[in-house]
Length: 617
Image (tube, rainbow, N blue to C red; front, side, top):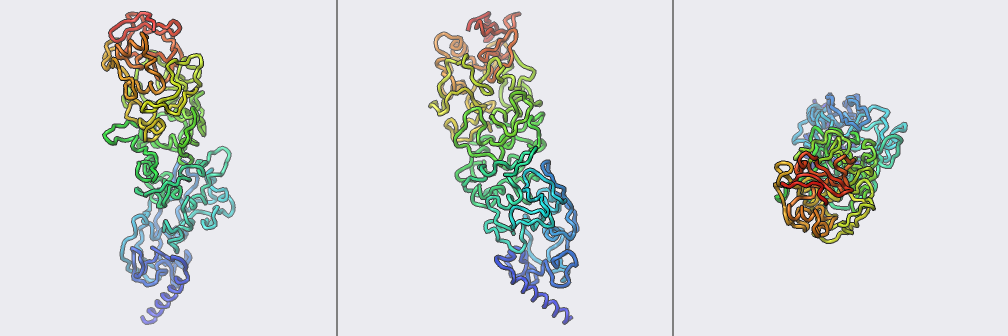
């Protein structure tokens, strides 16, 4: 017995000498000795002996391993964009050494050389990964590693290596010790997580993931990162909720959205599932200066009911490999319209119809055929056409989710497909997908668009407009509000930025149930959306048909005009000047169908309890 105690003392002394050879902060939380500052402490005085033993350790694996190894198998990471093949880490593999403590199946202090060492305290929950590792960064990969557009080309060499000597491949693959140095906790002073290098500004991630790499036939999803807002913003973060631990958005970089372990959104290791990931910063609280508060535009706040673009459901999330045309799969998640790796701060807004900086490097759909994917989209409307073009499953014209929808007399095969309504071949349309026709200039058109308060904005009335000139946040910054730009949500129906009342009738041809005679023509009135671009005083001047129907009858613009456009004419509706009646408000005049002749400037119909037979407008 005395001999055994003497031998144990020799081991302790040898271990002490070994630990003294370490420099810097040494073991940190991995120091389980009784005198350490770790939350977990044991009865052995020397810290090294909890993992290593100079004698009596396992014959395999090295280095002189002393902690009993886990024999568990694991559920490994996977996603639609993951190209690798994961392997169960063998019992003797480098990562299995770490998991002998961190998978939570073997108690701390279960040593090979010294038996069970009494250990008190509890390991941090964030360090106990369990056996379901689907929400942790992949490791123990089958070699050679499969190529992928965003991986460093150095990983394809033999032997594989990263772009940073501090980040080492282990036997040609990624293991825990590729990113973690178990003997030194504070190499990264801001994130004391045993990282092999300072990880601020995404340095650790970028050692393997290369935004600048160009490959044929595959898009690099990280392209544009160097100029992106998330890589360059100096806005400070309060880290409440936690978004990476560093002091600025740029320093957090990848860590702001991704978690290397225990991610909430396992596919692609997101901090929050789907667009909740973005709301950690875009909620009006987490950065200074504040990032655009998108959360407020998509939820109810300050007693204001917002109508948002549809939130993705858990069963219907965005996926990077989904087709450009979202058939039966409509979900307006943040990353359907924004590329977080390339999005740039709004700053100076581009002229229509070009894509805006916040939508840099997003996917779109061609307005020519409604099918061809455009990566990246060049024009803003191309991103909208992913859902509002040829896609199936858009809903119906009787949907009330976004307010009343007019039932147009002249309809196409798909009344919600905006491509034929707004294409260059359309009879008439708002100039979103084509230049404004110089032969059909409206006398009422203002030289410049108006701000919310009626003052003149900096936006001149050019040859094109954006979708977001009508569909926008009701308090967007572009036109004088304090909120985020873009169709995230609005207190007005159809995600319109301003009030646009639509007349209705209990029966076609009858009196209108929500008539507004002598309406308020100011910026707060029922025609505010149209008044942004059109001088309503000119529209209603004199004894025009507009003056009579608006002032006397109280009809809205929507009774006679469609807002997007008219693709092809019919024998009864010629379609000039966006005239396409709401069939739920107007009715045929006896046996004569509802007609509009743009050339003769006449219409025949019944409306507001009156009949019109070739009335001149």
